[in-house]
Image (cartoon, rainbow, N blue to C red; front, side, top):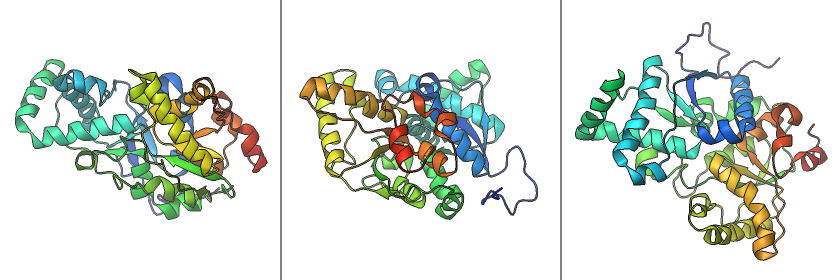
Length: 311
């Protein structure tokens, strides 16, 4: 059995050590695409990261809809989640772009604006919680790149992704607004690319890599969202990608489900599997597709991946 590369020098582990994190799964993954959570748990266990479950976590909440409706409510609900993690003295790792943005932004805003913090704390007092500003929030990609490190990620590869041509979709909320989330390069993210290249994949450049998937737009204007996806898919097809890699559950769903709309709206045929970065890591680490729930994808990836020797 391979030694966990980031814990091999440790003589003792504690419940709140440097490799212990509160897992913030978010609403979308738990309720709609739980196989993504399964792949994340598989990968982090392999890497020696202990994920702790907090049964009291609630919605982050949404950094667009809720915040635009009531900024104070957004701050208060986000502060409650942060206060719960502070009670365990563990930093948060999030599997979602939107959740990461909200929790990072609320953490930052309440630290920088004492008057807002005072109002929020008066509300938290009613439920016996206190926001201290004592923990950090990490997007899972940020944690993998900065805490685990590329050499450690590469060292556990059993079955390299050699030959797989992957188009990455980072998503809008991953590294922007940078002054709040402080994650990766805001205009040209590089962490997901480095992780996938460490697995042996060929990561493609394509023109619309940083274009929005249209998930938020689709709530109000489906035609506009379809138009955005058409440009996105056309660019990915031009690059001859085998797989689209996502790091956000909303983007994942939009990029997968949206393929059905293309034929109806434009007569455009799109059948490109969309996989979470943790799913690609899991199969590179020896995980089996069936065990990881790949059969539950709407655009099935199994036939393609079997051609590359994955089971």
